[in-house]
Length: 143
Image (cartoon, rainbow, N blue to C red):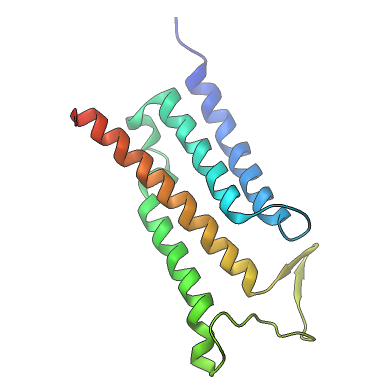
């Protein structure tokens, strides 16, 4: 008899990642944050490890490229934090400046803090998934 858990975990993965992104974006309206969203996304991936095993979970692009995801997030964080130095502004200067025109996508306002939070989301999720994969690999080696 084949278990329904691996197939159910695959069905739950995409909605769980959508919820993680929603928690990240909710932080601009109410309580919510990118760190918690990254943890939620990583927990969705952990469910794949528990339900299907390492080989099946590593077929997911988000797992195979988790270190690169964390690296992109770190580059995004550093770019937002130190990019203003290029234009002679203080580090972590937010754009657009107060009174400036803000680009909207629905109710979401695009400014540098959105990019900063996206970087945090990517770093947290990428790091946790990489750590989980490393721990699972270590346990398979018998160490």
